[in-house]
Image 1 (cartoon, helix red, strand yellow):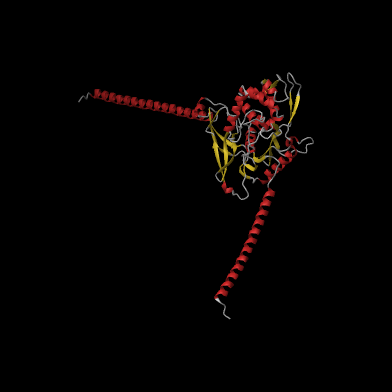
Image 2: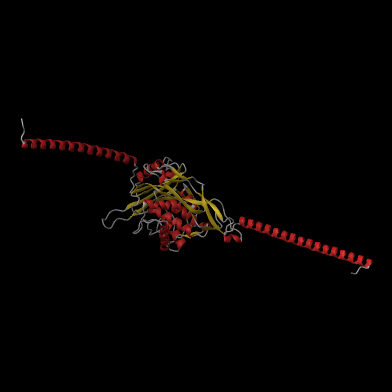
Length: 473
């Protein structure tokens, strides 16, 4: 039976619609499967990520400054007592010698208004003020140190901002030395991490942040006091159960944020918890900003665990490896090797390749003697895919005393001795050559004289023989 043209057209149209429906169904199923796979993959990735109740949190390498994990790490927030890290650094920078730690400061009215640890007009040493500021989070001590160091709070605050700029803390601004909440004062978790990393290079600050208790001597107005660290991961808390293995420093600070004038809200606490720990020669930092007291320790613990577990331990350089030489002006040695202070690690994501890692040793052009062992002389900079990740300090490992006068021209004592010996040898050789020349001259002169005498004697003999023979022709 022959079908009509119209029937064939209707049949083909029906067939094409059926095929399209099948294709749509297949595509729908494939998309659904892809979405399910993506959701599952994202869920697995999310499960692998740490979490915290903090408004901002970061995990950083304390060696290179690399950010391993960040949750709003670049969010500008009230910095609380993190400012005291910068205050301590600037105070120490302004000192002419460590003997200034023994100097005493009288607590003025402005400082006394900041807390109740000290009394008005109480006389306290600079050393005790540093401990009170960093261990007890004392705002009074911060203000007193600022006035002592720079003459006024405003001048000192300017110096804090100058140092922040030098350190590259682009998201940090100081308005006072204590970190008390004030308009125009803010920082980020990442910048706080950089502050802590730099502060720990100061031996005095590192020592203070690492003690559990400090006994402050009696003053003219107060009896002896004992200050206790607020860092529970260091002290272990009341029963010692909160201690975290390898913790060797950190700060915990609370400041009250005034209520907003816009919404009439209540005052709230601004907190910062910065802790640093070392395990298997690798140091990690955790910075938590505005984390509730109830979750702070647990959050810091889990983030440290995450950092030590997930950082790919790619050793770029071991500690104590020579990476170049630095010139030392007026030094007993004027060309001194520099070494990596610590192991250099780099964080490489699971999908990354070690071939992307590059290092570059940048050594200072010169130092000036005397130089103490441990003095920073440069940095071993680490790059991943041409992006700067961090650096490890290059240090001098020996004391370099001042050298002799030629060392002003970068001629070391040893080289001076060698040059002196060489010049002496040359002088002795020259003198010996002169002696040999004079001796040879004397010998030649003696030979000439002997020859002349011989010739004269010969002539005398000939003349005598002629006279005897009477031969005169």
